Image 1 (cartoon, rainbow, N blue to C red):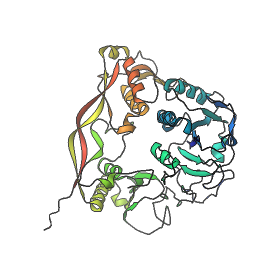
Image 2: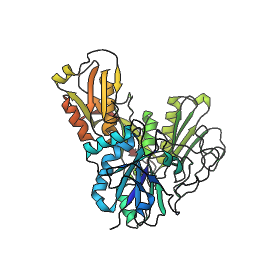
Image 3: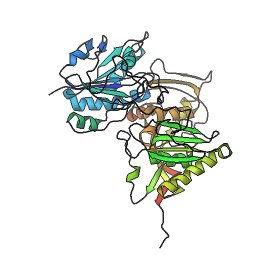
Image 4: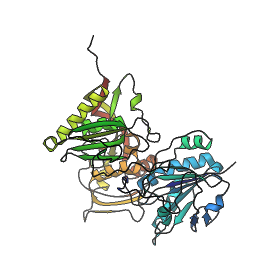
Length: 452
């Protein structure tokens, strides 16, 4: 059985999409190109593997896949358990090689060793130099960035994510579509240059992001494609709202609540369910797939200064969606699930702050340890959702029902999965318990046709 080594690149210290440059930049020397031999690479420091040094030539005759990560990349850290499951399931047919940089303090190296122990990770980890040379040479943009090389050393796929079932199908020779990756030099998954996009200009103006047109007052909806730049711009004062490459659920939530994802500093946290409830005969248009560009839309609204306000823009967006799709939208009070963060009487006493300066620290182990001194409970609620993936995973909010009004002191040590977070909370006399409460909920229904 042939072994597979997977490449997944997550560029360091980036948190948002790279948007097209005004002047196209051509392929970099040594950059992987689909259909061409993969450039040689070398790693002289590899942990938890049979060899301490590896290179591309070591894997000739095998499929190759790598995963680049960093302590600053929350998505990378959160993916460790799922990658580990795939490594265990596929065993000798796939070899994930995690790749990061090694700095003077060896933070990433120490951190990975800790996660390997906590999560029983089966993937070896290779360390690039501190300047992340391979990231530059391979033209890696935003995380994640995946490269698949076939047994002959030819680059077969460059994508932003290799999903388990799609990866297996691809390995079996089936036609598979993958998400478009990000490059420092932006271009399409096929190696073609994308439409160039400047986020400081409206979409489709003077060729910005595609074929251009002119307008004075504009609302527009298009379907996204593999060439579509991903972007969100909401500027009520300048009369502009633009969401490119988003599903309808996101567009409707933005139109009716002013946002489509629950944030960490969110006034809607306790009383609003952001995902629309669909009471429709046909919901297929709401079934989206970022990987395959299925049912993703580009909405652009630009209004003159006289109409530039949040209320006016959201009202117009609501009207546009009604006009485009014909659904009746109402905001109703409905019982929806949530996570109750609760505390024992002992916890309320023991967690109470002893005073002193307000301080936060990760003790040199980001995403694993948090030391809180004289911090509000609201901060703990935020990091529970962020570190455990509760909010990101299923949209269910975490709501503070501990009854702890003042600040707290707390030392946390956990891994990036929900079970580990619950166990650590229990150790402090806290718990996450499922519940239901009335929340403002957007409900979409088919419009009633009153015509004879």
